Image: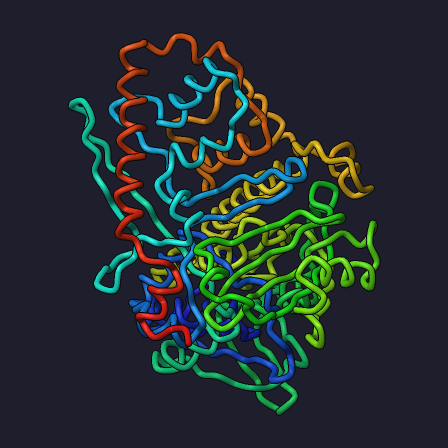
Length: 523
């Protein structure tokens, strides 16, 4: 079969991925009949509560107003990720969403900062983050650039220094309760847009003579026919794996963690703990996330079962969070059955979205981004009401490139560590398989940090430089010695003006908690 008309789409599985897909497709394809079938007794995997700045594209497309959905979903704001103890115990670094600016130069400001760094004692890499980004200093003060009257998801400022004008753009993302977010999409967008919800269990998948999915049978005796089927069944991968048998490409020799423990804890001091950033802290066999939403702190331990059994992992996790604080609170243990992705996530007339397409640990908060991009690219591919083999192949190439790029980006947090204090960290340091794509990229970065347009889909040059600086993977000197003195002085002046602006903004910026309180989002 080379082509197919799309008049009926059946989504199998609800939860966040299912209802994100249903809401987006119902808006993008208003003339297509969309049915979502979900089992009432399958819990939502509650680990995807942090997002990245691109996720605002999803809420914007659906015309979701923050004042309407964030209070319902316990939403808060996020400007960066802070990484504790990754390179070495006691050290931390930042990954802000803000991009390094270009000020009438072919090199971004981070490159000029690094040229100055090379001329000094080279002992304070940490100053890079506050010197080059507006948002990091504000994050350290628990302040945000939002105000009750502000709109839009990017703050824009203009610097003028020595005849040079440069635009600074500071985007943000969100923290929220993923389960509540899925419910909001179902009630406020999906069903009002005509999505048909069926609560039932799929018992059989029927295929035609070409192997395409023809219909689904349910426990309640319903037969659901469709032209396109979206697999949102999570790790079960009912359609893409159990039915179509698509091969799975494992990343487990590059990314070791395969278990998670999730926990919801109350605030000790909500004003102090309402950080406008996600925190990740490396422990003995993995790392802990900390995500403050308005009603609680979402936290969890992602670890490798080869080095730690569940009981010991939970004990270490509770000690980290605080044994008294977690006393009586129930943890949820999650078995991450596969790390990697299915070779093709669009097979015949089935598209896998969310955990059913693959899994990468949520270190860089990409889980819900993958759902958004997967369904957005799908909607774009079938906008004309049909698909063919070329469309399917293009979609699969894009998803594979995105996932492999994310795999490589996550891997640098591990493979560049100096830690050898536990068997896990020794294995990470010495036994990780570094993909050829990452090895080639690191070789280029050793000559000079990334600069200018790149083929990267997800993480641009600013993101790579932030992690490489944090992990002390420094570029050589040769590429920086030929920067003209006059240009360097002008760019360093821009950086001084950036600091002046940050200090000015800090005076008027609101505490994250205070802003949310003023909107009535926290008690």
